[in-house]
Image (cartoon, protein in one colour):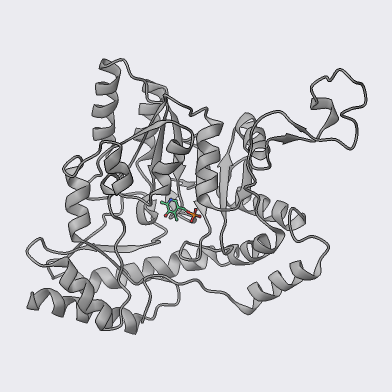
Length: 388
Ligand SMILES: *Cc1c(COP(=O)(O)O)cnc(C)c1O
């Protein structure tokens, strides 16, 4: 079976991890710092915190912009559940904004309509989580303008978009946002096994998320709160001043991440070439694909196509799988998950997302997928679509 996505681990990656294993530190050693610095430099951002996974990073991001009980957070329904769950972890309420039918990202016009609606009802939106779907950046200039207007925090869920570009900036620079989050799960652009990162230009956000990622502990005596008995908290001490978590990543993982990062640009290019190959082969057939916005470079985490409404997506899915092509579906609209239905959402709430979901199919895409395999996948897909 050709999977929809697959990590690439080289001999150099293995060597890098082995060096970490033989070193003095297995966690919180020099490789964590090196990986954070390398990511920050790559993205052109001031601070980077590497953590245990992107879900943890999204949770920290919400806490860092003070999302709490009673607050309202908005995101796209076409994403992995983690983009919405992070708001619920903080006790906040979540609502969704329907997607654009061409880019499959949150539609800025519909966001504006929703913001205006909420404002009229006297409800303030605390944060918006913009998901760069399949590696295509959201329209960040439009979202920034709305964030200024409506005074919400803007968080980029760039789990798909490491290596992508928006106009003249690299995704992760946080030029238009407060925080950007990446995932290093094996299906994503680069991997650390499990892993994630949180990037920001804000010193305040950075010190807050660093503390929260490690139990909320303070270790610098100068920052200790006074205590009745002198020397109770002295040089050896740590103080817990707030409730945090253990969201740390290890040196072993960062050794892999550092080595993987050296391949990123090459992989983005390979994915773009493969996507172009797919498009050229599917061009004259009734199959649609994601629009890549002008002045943007997608990282092409996913190659999503939309099948004609007249054919059964399930039949195509099963026939492709039977033929050995590991097609997949990204994503089941979050608002239709049973947990979210219990919160009051219903089928019909976000019609563009639901129509997208009924028709979408992710075709295999990873850097060492062969052009010959792309041809076989397309030939099979076209046959499935023609036969009905
Ligand atoms: C993968 C993914 C996540 C979660 O990433 P983890 O590192 O597995 O926690 C969050 N959001 C999106 C859009 C993702 O694709």
